[in-house]
Length: 112
Image 1 (tube, rainbow, N blue to C red):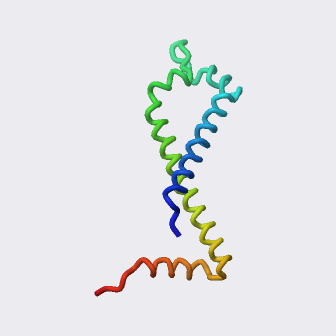
Image 2: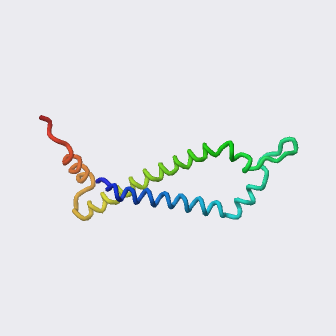
């Protein structure tokens, strides 16, 4: 079972919106502002806050968010494929393993 490119774009759009919504809700949570203002460390009487760290970790954090997106996208695609396979199996009364075998056989040509 293969997901159509149109459906795949829809899934990607859903995840992008989900991640943006998650980021927006986290940014608005009141407890986060309180924690941001608390010093993480004090060196020579000078506090170091989370905002002070941002220029040093921003690129790495961006990469982590991209990795998180990739992991969730692949997991969603796998789960959608699994659900489609299970649905087709129930509809036709054919075990999922047999459906996968039939799909693979239909794509392989006999050697000449």
